[in-house]
Image (cartoon, rainbow, N blue to C red; front, side, top):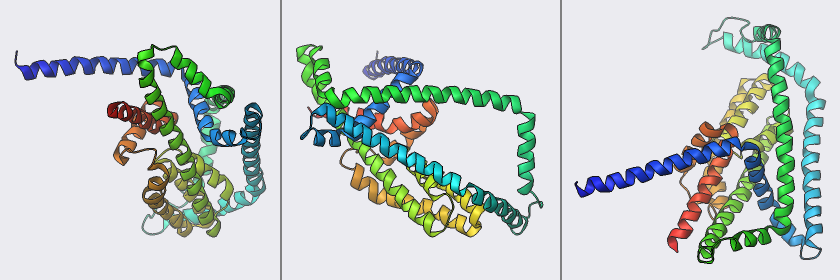
Length: 340
């Protein structure tokens, strides 16, 4: 047998075994979706709140530092959500009138050059939506009940994540040390290097992404306020959440903002909002990411794009959100072990 064929066969069956192992791992993780996502969220919470907890632990007991940090965080998040809800409620009536007039403006715009659509194309859409809701009432009700079940599951996972993060913040180092002592002594240095590299990369990526998302949200909020687009605060929150998905999240949120601007302010303002996609993308790609994430995540943008696409195919929106940190952590661990 030629040596090249023997080498290729050796690589082939090993790659097949790795592929089978990866498939089985993804299958198991899919079945354990709730605890896996809760653990991931708990690690995110821990990476974000660990610095203030360590700072407070210098002057107060660590348990009290964890409690105070969690209470302040919950109050901050609850206040933002309450403010968003109040803003939507206050502007809903005015926004309804603007949207009603905006649909007429969009209809007149589309009937002219260069589109030349049939008059009433947009304004008739509301009637068609009403007919669809009437016809498919039972299916929509069933979907709503299913969504309610998903919301309960989401709240359960969030409670589990907060519960785990409390212990990670309070005694995460002792938990990791205990786990290492359960391993054979000769493998502990390897696990120590791998764990240190993994946590450094994950924490740096999480904090960096939050900083980038907050920067994008502030820039979008300023631009929308200058352009007098309604519902600025809810759109800013949407931009912040969407920017947590690299590359594709921010453009999707800005498209939603452009639709609101199109209905409320007209096509010119909508085009200006769409231009923000290019501006924000350039700022994020050439300024924020190199400055904020360059020290913790060193993977090529092509790898990021492929990771997001693969994660979206395997796990939808959640898969797209966790794909990049998983790939980043894996690459950091491989690099740390390879250099040693």
